[in-house]
Length: 231
Length: 263
Image 1 (cartoon, rainbow over the protein chains, first blue to last red):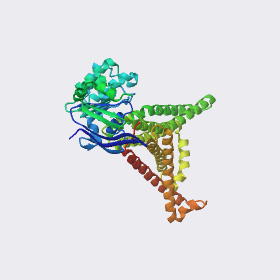
Image 2 (image 1 turned 120 degrees about the vertical axis):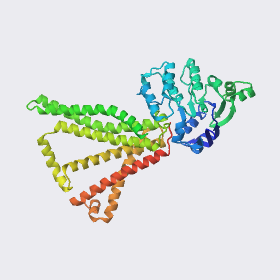
Image 3 (image 1 turned 30 degrees about the vertical axis):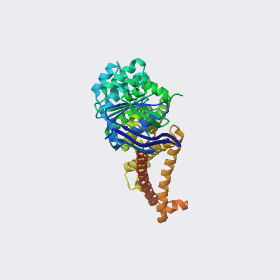
Image 4 (image 1 turned 90 degrees about the horizontal axis):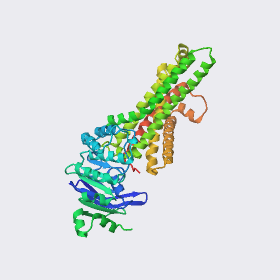
């Protein structure tokens, strides 16, 4: 059984169609890049998978079941914005995750935060945007989830920290779990991708294995992307 | 999960309400102290000021109770924090119940604090006697004790606040469905929900009045109603209002379970 399946998925906002007939299967144990220009529908698709939007038509199945409490237990989601209670300290946020997610590993979280030199007694509203994003990533990657969904994980982070974050992603996800990374910073994440999904104007225009695509086109994923989406 | 949600909701609400509780009690004590000194104009003026401050703190307690719950509801289910709320492995119904239970309990506590402030500021044998004499005729009409009348009054007040709060939730849910970021629709739908809840109660009373001549006098004449009729009407209205509150709760849960569209 596939980890994630989207079947004939459509999403409209009023009369505008944002996602058109998306059919998608995400297997286990893969790192998948969800790539597309700004406004292509990446975040909409991710929000639908995470129950933040309602489906207009079609179906989303996680382990063969519709989205619900059970699917939320096994999906670890990093949104593209600061979403934690900023009045809390990092310590209290860890406690919060510990209470609500059975698969949260607080030891791992503390270790990763220490590696990043983040003070766990500090309140989130006293931290810079970049620091808050690092805390969020650590919390998300400290869950033993089956599916990690990371929406623009490198967006607000300096280039020097990007490699550390990618290594954190690579070394911290569960065996047999899959990771979906949505970004337009393709050159930064290219090295870790197993599969790629290109999305444009709400439609999936390409799904392929990263190595196979590179060999076939004799170019990097970044170059292929630039070629395909040239303005 | 409900217990865990309640813990965080209480922390968030009481963090601010506690300040109003302390201030209300503080001004209640000051009122009592200043009014206990006779023959001093300055202390009498200070007593009046403290009394005004205590009353405004008591009102602020209730207003803050409502406002903070609405703000928390909106922030949690439609703001940035909704990205965490909706991805927690918790049923939508449990999320909603947590907000309602938090409101019910904080309202009880707020009423308790208000009662304590009033007691601290004004308790004396003379005041108690005056109060008893004021409520005694009412208690006799209702075949109840004075405490029973106070409890009934508090219950009606509590129901009213609960209804206002829930209609606010309905407004937020429907407002976001209609137009994500605009608060105007939330206020409009909240107001309409409140208006509808009042209409339902009046409609039920009218429905009963069709089969009851005494009740019908309220709608078709301006003659004074008998005490027995007024008593029955009040009990029916309270029962009906309670049912309307439960109905709004079910409607909100149903609307909420249909899913959200977070911006």
